[in-house]
Length: 92
Image (cartoon, rainbow, N blue to C red; front, side, top):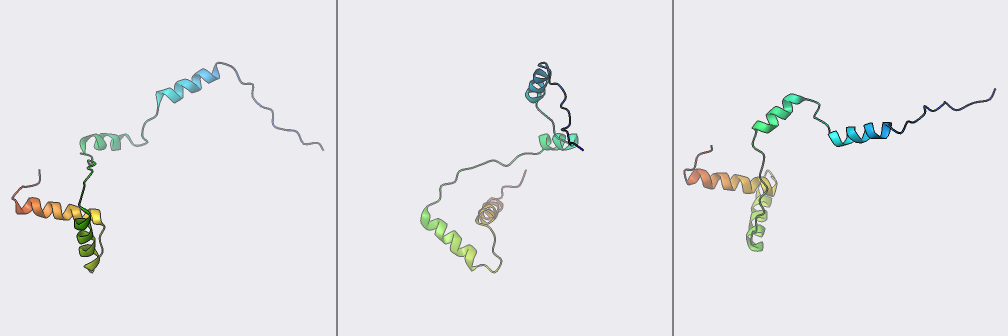
C-alpha cells in the first residue's frame, strides 16, 4: 500500500497581508490585571555608581567576614537605607 503525503492547503497572496497586520499590531499580556498593577507600581531605577577600588575591596572584605553571605548589591542598599534612617529621612 503506497504512502502519500498530506495535501497542503493552497496559499493565497492576501494571507501575507493578514500576517503582517497581526505582527504589526503587537500583543498583550495574558493577565490584564497585571498590566494595571505594573502601571501603578514604581519601577527600579538604574544607577551607575563609581566606587573607588579600595573602598570596593573594603566592602567585599566586610561581606566575606560576615557569617551570612549576602550579595554586594544588597549590602550597598542596606548601607544606603541605614544612612537615610540615621539622617532622619523617612521612606515615602
